[in-house]
Image (cartoon, rainbow, N blue to C red):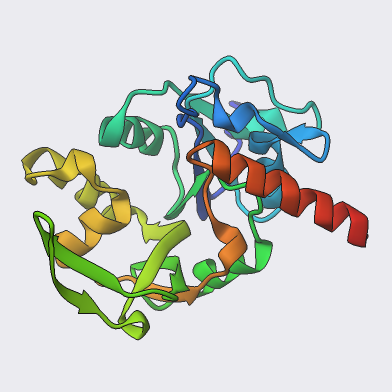
Length: 227
């Protein structure tokens, strides 16, 4: 009599962590260290027990902490642009997929949970910070108009999707003009899909340059001093 095959666990929530970005000098941002561990480990540690599986996109040279359940962590090569996300999506099985960045020095568990809650009602949800400045539209050296601050929201992370919708958005990138200059949020909106709004915070920024990294170090020092 043949032994019954073990049933594969159902994957409800997958997390894709984009760890491809680098500073202008070429340093891998995911490998920068705050509080004794690199930013990628900080992101994985936050999500431990919150999602069913992880896929790390890029940062192949970076080893993960031994206690971060490596059996549930898949790796995808750091192909540039939307193609890398397509590869990472293929490595996951979740009915819902959350997109994170290892360049976010202060990820927040509450925001992650609110995005997951919003996905119970909408096919896409994301974190946005309320506007504190107006956006100006210029032509050449002349400013023509401005958008009131209350109408302006900055895209942050995480961004969550029903799996089918994320696959549709990424597949459409090849046929959408300018898609490689957009992030996933911009492409989703360009394609006409609404995104449920979860309000973020000023400390939810991403590290893109040395000034951002200096700010992250200063905020981390303040947190340690206040603890």
